[in-house]
Image (cartoon, rainbow, N blue to C red):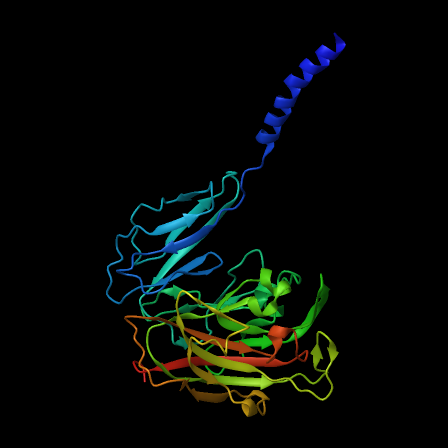
Length: 369
């Protein structure tokens, strides 16, 4: 009789325990917009994501006053306003995604741009990734639309170094400018050392047109940076102002000190064709991918440093790999603009204290020549 009671109890409790396990399964806390697109009739590029900002370049003169976008969000989450409700994208549109758990929320702001950005004055800086205090330059197109064009190594550095002052991060605004109130300053600093199996002795200051994925920084630093922003006109020249002072200490690599080596900076612009095979370049192919059409690279002799504390101009022609004309109706093109205080900073190499300043940078095209 006792065995029968135990068996009966087991029959009752086992399903109950299983039901309890199912009930306790936590709901998904993620609240992400995974994809965002506007109709091909108005859109010239796929959406560009940077934190909570989403930018889409649209055709000049396109009517975007009442459009229902296509939006994919995290499973189980809800979005407000609903994706099938037409919106006026002549102004920024704010979407709020609430996770399946009903607790976590994320706010996205969608901007449409009818012009590519070719002039960068570094006058406007914002903290785009709270609670982190670092700032990133933001740009405005000729219609006054705000665009998050830049990302930086600050995003990765913030994961291990919680500065309370934006000026302490490697990339920050500086009042030592070529013109206007501010320029951009990048400084190579001491890295965190050993993190998991990766040795990071130095952390270069790098600023670039694109997006950084800090999750890749430890697995493969060359994949952490994703380069490219829409380009709607043929670039001819890459020009601006810079001042560079290499650090005076030892040249440090993950394997130790490299004697008799000096640091140098990076100032590059790369035009490439975006297609199904490559939407953005990364550190493994920024100068070598077969889709690259033209390069404008600061010459090696100019990367080594500048005299004095004043800015000096640079003016670099784009060198095209072929005479094939660009077809902006058929193809999509992107431009990667890259600055770094250490030439091999993406490999965690450089000299602590190396400093690069840039200001009033411009891409000269056939339209604005």
